[in-house]
Length: 299
Length: 297
Image (cartoon, each protein chain N blue to C red):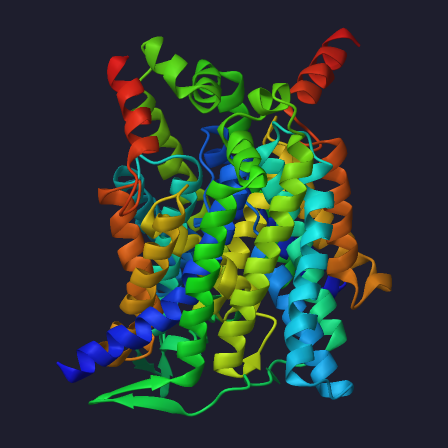
């Protein structure tokens, strides 16, 4: 029982970072209805900038944080301009493929910058941990959780309490209607991308600083973890993304503990497949799929 | 032809199968991130059949395709309700389950004092059919292309028949197709199974060409690449995916100038291409115009 609860604690802490990644996907997908496969790779490239500065310029940890996040944002802007802004609005699949093509570019840039497989990533300022009864809280995990909670609250406030949030939600509802109301959709999308890259950069930093190493495969890992966390919880809502992230984190830590490392990813994909087959809308939010089904039933 | 050229051309042929399989699904309106699973199933099954059981290649191909097709039928039935990103992630999850599952499959038998068979992450080596039967790489390349042309002929024939129109309609607007009395579920399943068989066929050939396979060959990257080939080449005709494959493997492997920068150049090229041709090089409109031009002249 102690193990089980300890696993849940660890799962929630890692899941918090997954939740942030899922929020990134949800915002972009919600606003544009297009899938950005390059989300993970742009975070990976940002982290490679950070590691590169750490290894060659002996950058201090706080500078690595800034470089990682700025690198992610700059890469995010590049992706947005090339794959989303430049491509016609109705060509959703073209944007997805284009973001995949750019993924290949980003991965190669990372490999050219630091050839080799694994590089150390500087740890956070905090280390050690906290004992609470039989349970142990890693300091990195606590920091991750704290920052994630702050960010989720901040994102909610931004989306529901500011003019920018209102405009963003309007664009995601209907770009045309938003345009008539004097909102410029491409500007909102641009800023949404910057916001998402910021979130992603922070989440990526937290994950890497906990693991203390980075590889070019981190991009693939982030993209699919984020997508799965988003789909698990249900697309299109912040709370869905957070819950999806937490569920994914808990599933992973539990199976890793009880069944071993080999089953860690397997179980996550298995649960994902099961959720999609049985409850396609994710754990929250059933709306989209139900409407689709209804339309068919009418026919 | 030099050995290098033969291996490149053979690779293009084998990857073309999985690209065509992703293309068939795209035509019925499904984006699949998981066609590599059927490719892998075909490769493993056919490898087991020839290397462990010592059966002939044609039987291995039949069995490999049958198993891949059946898997596609099961997954297709389970995912019938899904579309768009939901379908993409469901197929991705399935493919990753297959890949991770293969990592823990250890079934080996002793043949001539050596252990042969899938050995988890160590892979499955010694699929020695081409050595045992003295098939040169060039001859095997011919086998690949004869089969590829066969598949292409089926696809072109379907395209010209009523079935092709029906399938395009199912992909274009399933609701409208349903309203016209078309059995959308049946045609989607048909396309899914056919796509699974094609990918399985490619996998069978791949296992025997490389003689060594491992689960990580069949990762998400293979699936997303095969999807991208069709979308770069265009979805108007079955030759579209071949253009995509040719561009990626043929063109860039051929030109060694970009060594080390290959993906930066290719990624940039594709991104720019998609800005000007969002539906690929040979999209429906362009295919239609070419057909009309051919008819007139």
